[in-house]
Image 1 (cartoon, rainbow, N blue to C red):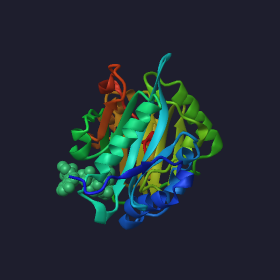
Image 2 (tube, rainbow, N blue to C red; image 1 turned 180 degrees about the vertical axis):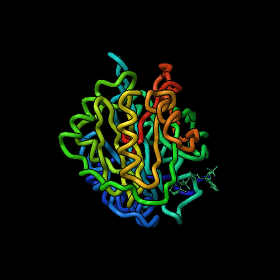
Image 3 (cartoon, rainbow, N blue to C red; image 1 turned 30 degrees about the vertical axis):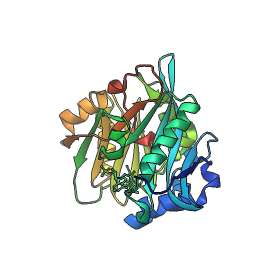
Image 4 (cartoon, rainbow, N blue to C red; image 1 turned 90 degrees about the vertical axis):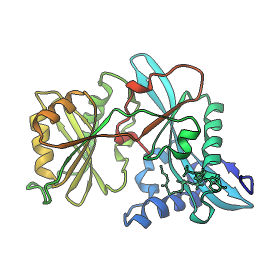
Length: 291
Ligand SMILES: CC(C)(COP(=O)(O)OP(=O)(O)OC[C@H]1O[C@@H](n2cnc3c(N)ncnc32)[C@H](O)[C@@H]1OP(=O)(O)O)[C@@H](O)C(=O)NCCC(=O)NCCS
């Protein structure tokens, strides 16, 4: 039973500073991280169709979540999706059904906007499972704990020529993908403090960096280029967390040659927002694109 009905508004993030502050408090500063989402997600926040679902009761902010509409392409076919993230209820308002209401209101809003599906990433089914979100994840995580810094200096941040090269390779990718703009290469997921782009021939890796730890958010490689790409990653970072799609060329090479400890990821949850049947089991959204 919910005591008070939640009012839900859908402003653009630029008009929801209190909600952005809540996201920062919950996901950044209370976890001893730095850099506000206003900077981390500036690529997403600057797009007009992005919105925050802001829940309030008698004028007080109770909770919020972020919605990033995006286009998903597979050959000539396109779907419009909505990533939902940063789901957050202020501590004193928790366990009263507010997050469930925020999520339901956001789904309804996305339906009204004619979006085809939603995707989010969560460790526990909880409220998402109850609202019909289905778990399906093609992600693999490969970990190397070196415990010490790599020998080479970290390369320049996302230099414009490297970003353009990685973007061209992304656009040439076989299989379904998120449509990206060049500005999306600034996207900075916590805990990373800057992004490094490594290009080796027809292969690339996008890595978030925090101290000497590298988080590979996206990697594309063929057998021919992978030794060079991996050598550079392994040399630059101490601990490395590689996020990669199951069964891709990069995954197969890393599994055979990189000596990583592997585990299957189970974070992605999907929900069709229209009646079409959608092949979620074959889809994978790289960390690079996620909110
Ligand atoms: C996760 C989070 C958003 C949930 O917010 P919330 O408003 O408490 O969520 P709800 O009240 O809708 O549901 C939470 C639980 O309370 C239960 N609940 C709902 N109404 C209730 C009531 N009146 N009395 C008791 N429990 C209730 C729900 O059944 C649910 O149980 P679950 O443990 O099976 O999921 C909130 O805990 C939070 O902000 N956490 C920190 C940020 C975070 O981790 N976000 C998730 C990122 S994926």
